[in-house]
Image (cartoon, rainbow, N blue to C red):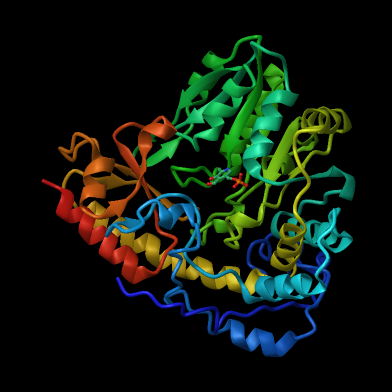
Length: 428
Ligand SMILES: Cc1ncc(COP(=O)(O)O)c(C=O)c1O
């Protein structure tokens, strides 16, 4: 592996002057660069630089205390596990951080008004979702949000339903809140993963109070369709469930013919029973800056959520707010370049893995994570075997998917290709 600190040249930022309302049409949703109300002073110049975003540039992450890279420090193992990407953030974010750092005073900070406006504009443009400023509850991380949710809804001994396999905190947060987890297995059907709503209904008891939804879904990479979401909402309505929807991967839809629909946007009843968790962290690769938010339109649910946070959940740090605002205001062009690059990586992963004996992978509609079935590979412990061959993957067992591995393709294509070749070499 060759590493240099290729840095951030070539990344840029753009702000456009469109108003959110201009873009509020079905064909514009998800296809527009407008992210907001504010315009970056550098306008056209920065826009030109965005055209040259280069995700193949090598950014050396070793020695930066990165979870992903430090795990294999001193070993020849390509880290394709924990869900952050190896790419530098959009230069608009880096510039905004520089500017804030230069101020030099880092006191207690509330969310900037400009951030609230930028989030409102983004949700309106992307999902035709009009949210009021008071619906937003700021959080230093989405995992905190999942844990707060489980404490806020219902009581000790109640049940939380969720589809599995799933991002591990969906399984641990209910337990930490002294709730039971009702696991509803996703089913593999004609080459794709789908929800089994009969099993969901059968798993519900009078003590099931909360349904945790991962949308888009980590790890299976599904973008839930409107029909699927409507069916879930219907069940939630019939059984009086609160829906906790983790939409952290919403900005990472890879299929051109799919769009993310926040379940809260379906209708008034669903909006009133839903707590949506969102963040710019996955999309703009800033998870280490810890800035997320919940959208809660119902005042009593919001009050319950805030009460569960009280005295335990700290404020978002000042740099997290700054980065989030820059992301929503000026990150859209970078995001579109990213999606194009990730589509290429996704296609490579699917092509290579489907040609390897004993491995299969579902089509990844969203996220930069591939869920790989290694149960027919002949490897007793696939994660260990791949690691021995020089690739670090996430063990599916933690997601309630033993025999599977999760591969993070948010990295340079050449590194990914080398990782895939090493996987091939591990197979009998
Ligand atoms: C579905 C999902 N939720 C939450 C998180 C983590 O959120 P945070 O880092 O804000 O706690 C991840 C990270 O991989 C994720 O995939």
